[in-house]
Length: 256
Image 1 (cartoon, helix red, strand yellow):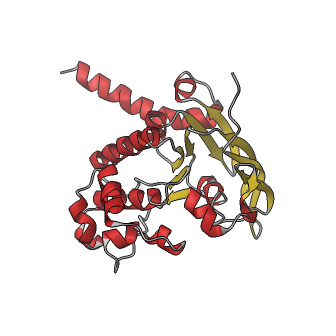
Image 2: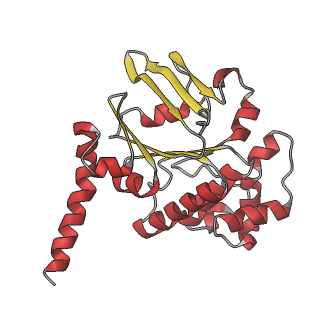
């Protein structure tokens, strides 16, 4: 059986800011249809690496190839149509309605989204289409982040990038939105890369986990392999946190 060509490739990517090396010589490929979690402590370089994909950061050395083309040679409007991006800070324009926020990406490329398409996108992220006329400050944090996901999907992207997308949400909302995104990933045939510092979230949602430490890719494993003790010390240090929490909860339950 033929292996599919990589959708995305990091080819010896280095990102320097003055004397600081945020990303140091990272190489890996992302296959179509995969859900990849990029994890690591704060300052490990994971968000910087993610931003090289849609050219928010341009590598100091190396290349990022999307469909075998260097992303820096692609027209920004075409690239951003093919790549959806969900911010941690949600990124909605406060003076635009929900519908206007969802339509902003296509609008920048000269396309007007019909109201039916906006209603469809809201339904996809499990929001009432009637919210289209609301302003962002009339929504809850979870609703705003769902609108952010709809906004990222509006152009029909091949690749979905998510930078700490659920970090500001309460645990119940965070878990529910994580499940929604995972279902959309499968239903829409997306390739997804999600930056998170939460290893439990990575293990539950992703089928591949990349671990960064001090700008270097130190582990590339499946969740099962990580839970089985693979990936090295840094990765296992991250896995230890949800494992210990699960063990403590199990111990509390057994004492009842």
